[in-house]
Image (cartoon, one colour):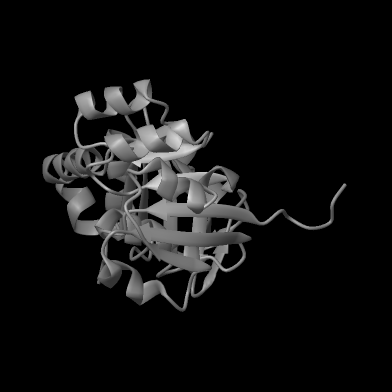
Length: 230
């Protein structure tokens, strides 16, 4: 068995808001053993990354010959950040790229992308809309939650800073969020360190705790943790 993790080669095509966000997220984790190549038709989108990634290319990736010149089928995954991406995806498929991740702006767009060979589809606008709706419908989430992600079947993941002295200095097993509210504490961040806690982990004031549960249950726990009693 190899002692070293294989370096994965990732190509991102289209460095707008979505593509640049993906690139910066990958670059923020220096331990992920990923080499990144960026491609965009507009050089100004690429210049902020020129000293951070393996290579940058100014190119029109709707052309199969262009993709072949980049040896595109050798990449472990290609992420298509461009919104007008059907021709690009079709060209990638013709080149034999096996793992394609692309963004879709509508359900119909997503269906077309799936039909022409996209492995995974991301709908950032739809996901943002769902998140906004949840925040508006549930004021506690909007007021207190630092990060909130919809999972599936009504479950969400949310993070909250502990401000309630009644919660601080107690073990997770003592708080018993799981049995009382059907909510799991899945991670705790304290200062710059993150922990996957067990039942005997003691929570402190200003810990950032991440919870998983159904939204109505999560809200109850968030409100408890956020109380700032004087």
